[in-house]
Image 1 (tube, rainbow, N blue to C red):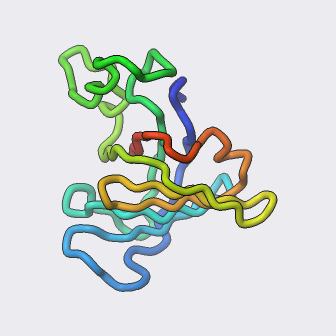
Image 2 (image 1 turned 90 degrees about the horizontal axis):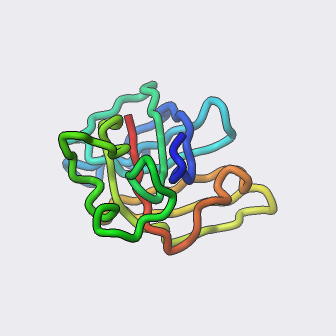
Length: 147
């Protein structure tokens, strides 16, 4: 796990477009974690990264793609998505990467919370125990990585 990691787990795809297909190249994917009591609803550009029911996804939410630093303030951190020849980016180990912002944190009960993020209009809702999502804050810029 990276020093920049905010959340890291495995999900299994349970449904794709449960409310019907709204867009040609984007699907809403519903997945659950086999190890944690977590649910993920995420919009994925399926023309770039196709998924199917039953597929296992490695999910990582990080504050920076740099492997070696916790904070990202310099120009090098902002450009970490650019793959260099001596690639130190976390993106090199994943198939699908999105950059976005956490815009809402909803406490459903004392233990259950939902975290909402937007990645250029593609939405994510991550629901589960507060203790697993406590590192994620509203307004944070994040990278979402899948493989």
